[in-house]
Image (cartoon, rainbow over all chains, first blue to last red; front, side, top):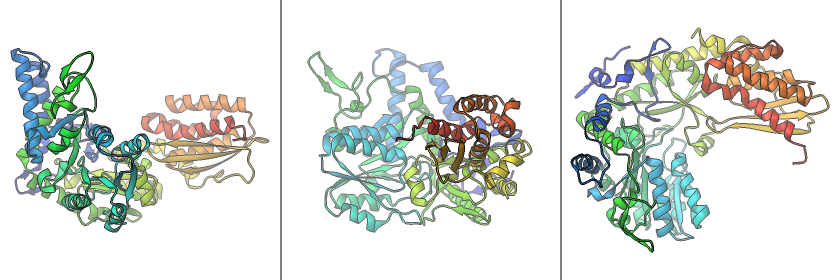
Length: 414
Length: 139
């Protein structure tokens, strides 16, 4: 496989060497991992950081008055500083650790949604949301009497601004919850323009950054995001750790999501008071090891740098769109002006599942199905798609291997 | 891809491309649906009880649609009790990969056993048929 790909400051061979799993053979073939949008592989730095905590400095955080606990607390809280800098948050208190982006959105739906939205208020999502940014709002609607509206997307896979404006027309919308990058179409949404639009209409904005945060520098202050969520495991970090960013004044107005240890001010049998944010939202022993792993992942990404990562992924995406569009009977979904390293497609001859199985036996891992976006499948007029998604370790050669593999699938089904 | 040939063998490719039992029956007593929410596959099975005629409308992969068509052929004229026996034997066969003489052409799906995530594709039509058999036609 050709590893010949050199952009400024980007040494693909050395990056690939940082990910032990990529050296594996699958069914005797080189592993071609094209499912990073579902969950990314982990660099050695992350694996070692997590192992190191358990071997050398592990204890519970925020509790022990002894050496190991203090060191672990420092490491854990140090990641909060790291995430705050990573997102360019105004303060570390605006960073809440959760289990993943899904939990972050559920936290906002339960806490902000029930306490600060009133029955009759409306929430707007787009047609291209992951189930994680749709179902929690449906549950809130059913429990709390808010209205849920869906802004359309264009056939290209971009926000339909006329539809969005129509959703906001009656002035009842109090929250716009929208993806920053579609996990199916790869479209980026214009986050700062959406935020300005929401704010002009008296609404808050929540951005689902699960995909976007992996590929581009995100600056929550420049966007003027009220809420921004992502998962560690898509950012080359471990599973079990996610992030909720929210503006300080909003977090301070929000009641707890879950009750327990670590989130309290004082407790008596009669009543309890709440800790200040962010600890108010972190009940129970947190994912200490995973949080430290996330910190290592952020260090790893920052060392490569987003200019180089974005440039690399743009080259990959352009190449993929070009060579896949040359395959007869292959339909690429979405054609957004601003799109990143997530490419969904269908083949006339073969169902997505059959494509994925046949590619798998060639060592190529792609996702097939509805991608946790069933309503979007309906909007696109398909029942499932195959999806290839790219990461820092993806090579042009791997995309060529995908194209070769797809032609083999076609031969088999022709 | 030689090892994939065992899964996508000629009978499966033929029956997914040119099914013999596709489409709703003109008259039927009950119907059942099989959904796989993970991938969007859906099969609807129409059952005429007098002669155990089965028609299917399959929206999904080659394995699922071929399985539905071979199932319709295999259960024709059989009693509910015979179908239950066949269904159990089928599930055992696609799980273990061991062909069973009693299953006839259904053995073409034995290759599915090597693809754990695809076993559900093969069994989905049988779930839909069980659903149809349980349907008393009143609902």
